[in-house]
Image (cartoon, rainbow, N blue to C red; front, side):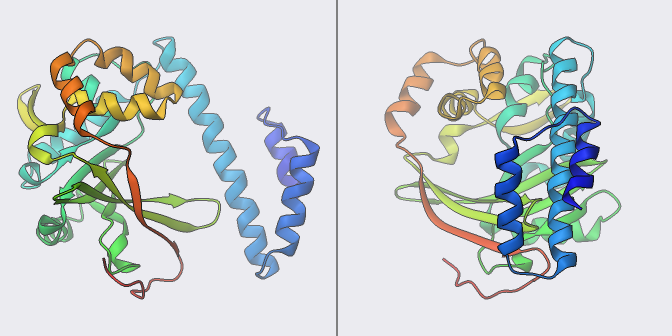
Length: 278
């Protein structure tokens, strides 16, 4: 079964070293689960490899100015901005520099990341539940944990994630999660960002004909300077055009290294509420 999948990957010029294949085969052979479950894991790895290759090719096209999906991203943000959710959510990450400058990214931005306070999440969930034709719930972390790590939605075919945060005397605690497509699980974390508070890292930005709350470019710059992935370096070049140097230095002086407070993993097929809330 693995050999068949590898031959299909080769049709897309995707190859793996022999030692890696052997290692994966032994690991899969010795792992728990039925034959069908093991085949499903192989399928997940295969699908994930194809998705990454597709993303790589689109990013190459985006670098050359031959492809952009940012109009779709902006449309989804416009839908959110014109909904009752707008005052309660803040857009994070890679969308920020392009929303502020109006420039087209030279990379593919595949989703919209937002944050909301835990106190507002009940109201957000109620609104989303009442509008399923606009906001399709993909994953709700509360189906798996008493800790609220937020929601993953789909809006007009674009993934939209709402992470949760709260403020303590030490700084901002962000709870977020990601779906691991290979293991069919959810990896969730609660991270403390020392010295960081909402009023200092959030701005209101006019985008086209509407307003939206964004994470300030200075703090996005700090986070991307730490991550240093290729996409982060591309975003940093745009951020350099709009950051306030004094505010950047001020936030750098206040913020410490993030610390993971809680890390949890949940199987997608097993909804439960067993973990103890923080």
